[in-house]
Amino acid sequence: MEYLSLMHAIMRTTPYLQHKHRVTDLQGTLQRIMVEAEDSQQCQMDKMIIQEIYKAFPEIAPGAS
Image 1 (cartoon, rainbow, N blue to C red):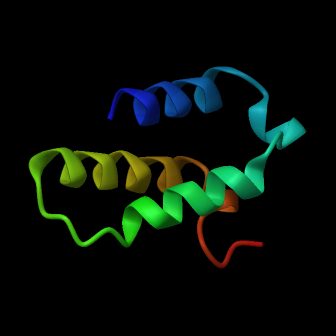
Image 2 (tube, rainbow, N blue to C red):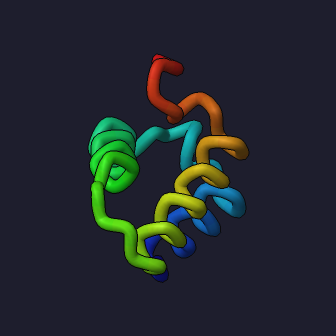
């Protein structure tokens, strides 16, 4: 959860998406987390953070390429 929150903050406060450094790796990682079957509170929080990232940055959401 902490790393996802940090990534979200970096994306919000820097021109990260202009440079798109390793954006395909980021997209793959976010997708793997979203399809995890685990139902723990931690996993649900991770998915919520990813949904917020997708809302704020739809260009990295699945199918946006």
